[in-house]
Image (cartoon, rainbow, N blue to C red; front, side, top):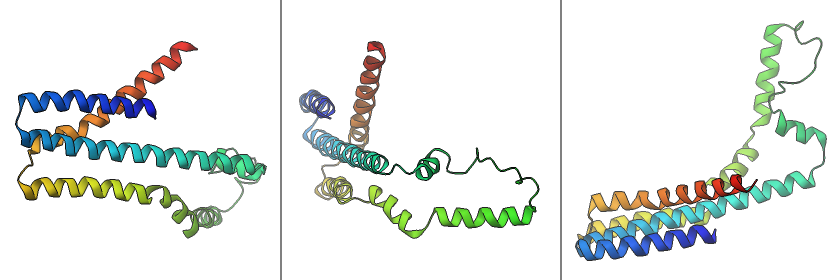
Length: 173
């Protein structure tokens, strides 16, 4: 995470200076607002995802029940060994599958899963993105081409840093 933050800051500094020197102030302001808000969204999303993964790992470690492990490894019972499965009536099989699918996705599970997508920090980060755009538009500082390109730059830097790290990890083994 530190490496990502450092890479984003260095990229912002270099590109910000270049835009300030070679383009106008409106382009510089559009760049900074778009870059900062996009980077904020990425960093908050990474933290949220990290928290969700760690929470899932904690739950997996605390539950040593083999049935729960089987649900994770084989959620659709593809490897279930039933000798009389072929002899059942197709209508009965369809009804059993419908009941099983309904029981898998109840309201509680849906709400629990949606908490990862609708966390307060994520909502704030997307709000900063929207407010920054509205501010630039209302004040007449928006350079749309620079703004759109600047939204993509933190994503490109993040992907590049992650792929670079992955290649380093693979080459060490």
